[in-house]
Image (cartoon, rainbow, N blue to C red; front, top):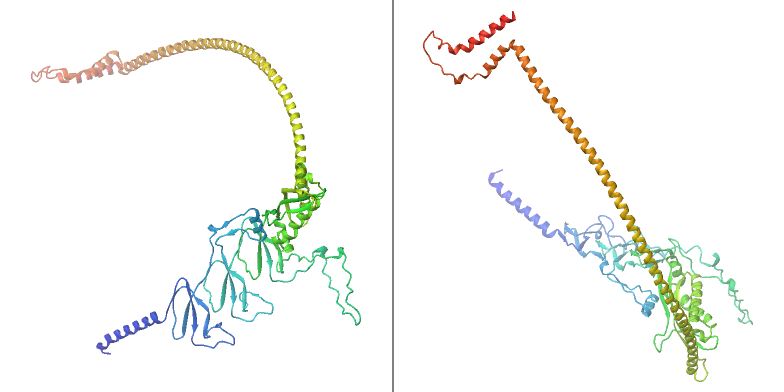
Length: 580
């Protein structure tokens, strides 16, 4: 190949490469934002089946089941098309803003009656998923399982989070999560499932079948009815509690917390545990819920009552299963029983008993005890039935009913005033007696105080004298012991002086003896005392102080420098002779 063709080919290759890269970047690129997903649509391939809306097999054309999450992708635009869809977001709520507003009085009673908890705020949600593709569900089938390939509501729900879901495959419906606040429990009711094994509660009996209805023959009338069942033959039709997998109210309740439950499958009823208030009072002039009954003496009694009642968590499921909700508990049990018991017991008291304080308290205790007994049998706890206000009215039809009532109150009031005055005078007499006795006791206390003070002084003086005597004896004994110790110390000092003096004498004696022995050894070493003296002279001789005068050869003075050597030689010779 010729060289002049190489460079054009290289340039052409780079141009083609750039065109390919530009095509990939601008025509094949799919940019999926962080809050979006991409639904792919295949333009060519095998056709979809009958009633098939989304491609479920590889190679089929149409909308694909899988979607692309946030990111960057490259697909051939000739084969593929795509649509950008928003991601499915399940809110998580804001627990920091949750509030529980507890009302009191009539507002609290209405809140309990309507099942409101007073719990407000931004709560978490769940996502209820509905499959839009797949086989038709079976008759009566409402929910489907994941991966079953059947259209319908998915049994599982989506918890808070972000999901990439194909909107052509699934619909997601946001539903509030079940929030059970503190002080509440959640009663769970299965909306679907098998029927409980037994439908009657009373004595474990089953519901008997109704007798067949026989049409009257010609000429007969249909006035003859079957005999009514006896009272003991009546059967409770309350639905029993369901077990897991059965339809109905479950025995186990949900504790406080957050639960993500499919509302198509289960219904959760929050029930406040503990005690609540139920009142029968006069709201205003036009609306009054007072309990009215006649007294034993024919007077009309109007009573305002407040009941403190509650449901035990163990019985919450059974209570809701029996009465439906709190409204049913109040309307079917607490309210009717309160009015009935109040009328039955109140009718046995006279009118003056409701004005008398002790009798009113006795009536309240009897009402509370009977209401507790009746409600406890129905798994409802009653803490107290409080009588708030009682009004006594004269019998209807009597003249001047208001005056009769006032006369009754006035008579009772005067009677009590007289009794209280008598009690007051009696208490005053008792107080005077106690006061006199107190003065007498005070005098006795003063005498006793003086006696105790005198005895105390005597004891103090005796104790001080005894202490001084003991102190003097202790000082004398201490002085004696000090003198003895000082004597022993003086003896020890004398002994020490004697020992030290003897030691010094011995040391000096030994030193002198050692010196003498040393000189003796030296003299013995030199042989004679004269030799030792000459040695001593020579050892201490200092020739630096001698001046020599030179007088010529052969004279005494010239040989004077050898005098020391001559003297030493003479000594040695003499020693050798002595040794012989």
